[in-house]
Length: 237
Image (tube, one colour):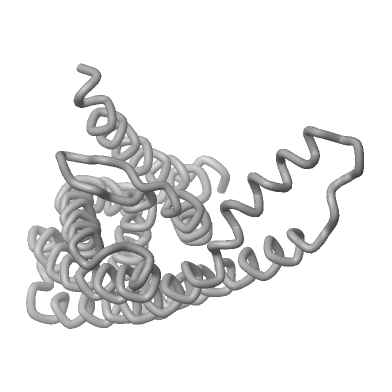
């Protein structure tokens, strides 16, 4: 059981992310989905600094929560149209820039002298967020390229596979290619020169594989969101 601890936690996190998205949608409607985009990109760019072993391969955390942003843009595309999905993508882009700027400015403050706890927290924050500029640049470029492709591809496939029972097809065709673009761009920019080539390639394969699993597993939740949209029964409206 201990050998599979990371894998079990990963599956639990996967389910938690999907359920939180559905809960946000049920609670706040369209704005619950849009709200999830900045949550996903910010959390993902904090978690990604942690490297773990999953399914026998080296992997970074943050894959699940970041991959769920594609689920959200697909739901927005399906239920509200291309423009709402594009708006959500730009909101995520702005939130990532804002977090990177504000947290790096915070690092210039000197901790309170004589306060050991303040010194420890400052060092811990520095450890995480000093890495952010490079990771943020990698994430911003990968995010824009992959998310804009995802919105475009979803509607391309929707024209060809427009029936509701083909929703799974347009969802997966758009997302799996978009995540390949995202993984390639992000891993190269964020980690080239940081890890050896073999480890870099392993991280890329694992990153894309894990995102592929998320994309395949999110299909029932796309249909669930579609049913919520049809009923229009949002709790806070």
